[in-house]
Amino acid sequence: MACYFGGALLVAALGTLWILRRGGIIGMDAPDTRRKLHEKAISRLGGAPIFVAVGLASLVAGYIGGLGWTRWLPVALCNALIFSVGFVDDLKPLGAKVKLVGQVGTALILYSLGVSIDILSNPFGEGALTLGWWSLPITLLWLVTIPNIVNLIDGMDGLAGGFGLFLCLTLAFLGYYRGQPDVLVVSLAMAGALAGFLIFNLPPAKIFLGDGGAYLIGFFIASVSLFTSDKGSIIGALLVIIIALGVPILDTLFAILRRAIRGVSIFNADAEHIHHRLILLGYSKGRALAAMYAVCLALSLVGLSILMTKGIALPMVGAILFLFALGAARYLGYVRSWSNFRTQLGEVMERRRQREFFRAYGRVLDFEVEHCEDFRSFDSLFQHGLGRMGLSVQAVVGYQPEILTLGGGRQFTLYRPKDGTELNEWHLRLDVLLPALERCLEKWSTLPLSSQIPAPAAHVPLVPPSITA
Image (cartoon, rainbow, N blue to C red; front, side):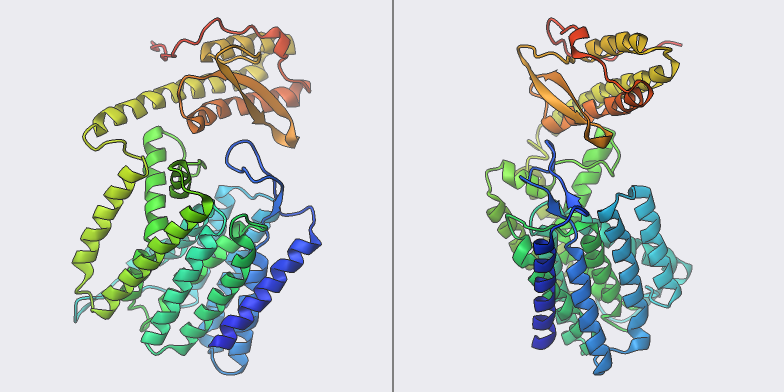
C-alpha cells in the first residue's frame, strides 16, 4: 500500500515539475482585476500529472492482481472521459452547457456499463429500498453533482486538492474496513497523486488544478464510492462521503441561495465563497486553508462514526451539522444578524431591483447597436444610458474606476460611484454593458469616446421607473 501511495506521489510530483519547467502558452490562467488576483499567469494543467499517476498505479495494480479488469474498466474509462472534458476546457473554454452535457454523457455511459445505485440499505439495521427506475436519476445526480461541487470550491490554492486528499483517504479506510483491497489500492493511489500535486499547489500556488483535475477528483470519489459495499447497496458509503463533503456542500448551498435571492445565474462566479469570507475576516491564506482542512478532517471522522456505529450516531450528527450550518452562516457574514434577517433580506431584494434596472438598460443598449445606422447615434444613446445608470467614463470626485475586459483583451474603463455597495455587486451590474460594447466594437471597430460623455453632477440612487402598458 505504501508503494502505491509513494509511487503515485512521485509520478505526480515529477509530472507537475515537468509542466512547470517546460512552461508554455496554452492552458494558462491569466490574472484579472476581480476574482483572479495572482500576480502572473499560472498553468491550469495540474490535473494531467494526477491523471497519469493514478492511471499508471491502476495499470500496475491490474497486472499484479490488485484490481479486476472487468470490474474496474468502466470506472477507469469514464474517469478518463470526464478528465478529458475538463482538460479540453482548460485549453480552450467550452462553456457551462457543453461541459454539463459532457458530464451527463459520461455518467450515462458509466450507468449503462453497470455501475449504479440500485438499492439503498437501512443504515440502522435490516431492510433495504429497491430503487427501480429511480436508480437512473439518482445515479446521474450523484455522478454529476460531486464533480461540480469539487470544481466549485477550487477557488483557493490547495483547497480542492487537499479536500480530495482527505476524501480519498476516507475511501481508502472504507475499503480497508469492508475488506476491499481494490478500493484501498485505487484510493491510496489517488491520495498519493494529490499529495504530490499539492507540493506545488499550496499557497502561493505554482500550478492550478484546472477543471480537468477538479472533475477527475470529484468523479473519482463519486464512482469509487459506489464500490465500497455490495452491488448497489451503498447508503452507508453515501452518508460518509456526503458528510465528509460537508464544507463544499455547504459552500454550494450558500452559493445557490445567494445567487437565487440576488436573481443571477447559479453558474455566475463570484468572490463570496467560504474561503473568500475567511480572508475578509482577517485570515491569511494559510490559516484559512488550515481551518478548512481541519473541518474537512473532522467531518470525515464524523461520517465514519456513522458507518462504524451502524447509523446510531446519525440523528446526533444531523443536529450537529444543522447547528454548524447556522453558525457558519452567521460567522462568515452571510447573515449579519438572525434577529434582523428580514431587514437584510429586504436590502438584498432592493439591490436585486437595481440590478434588474441595469440589466434592462444593458439589453436596450445591446439592441440599439443593431438599430442605429451610425456610430454617432449609438454614442449619443450610450451617453444617455450611462447617465441613467449613474456612471461615467470620466474621472469624477467620489467615483472610482472599473475596467471591463472585452474579447481579444480590449479594455473599457468607466467610473462608478463610491456608494458603499459591495464590489461584487457592482461587477454584476457593470457586466450588463459587455454585450453592447462587444457588438459596438464588432460593428464600428471603435468604442464610445470618453471625451464625449458628460460626467453626472452627483450620484442619485436609482429607482427603476414604473412601466405602464
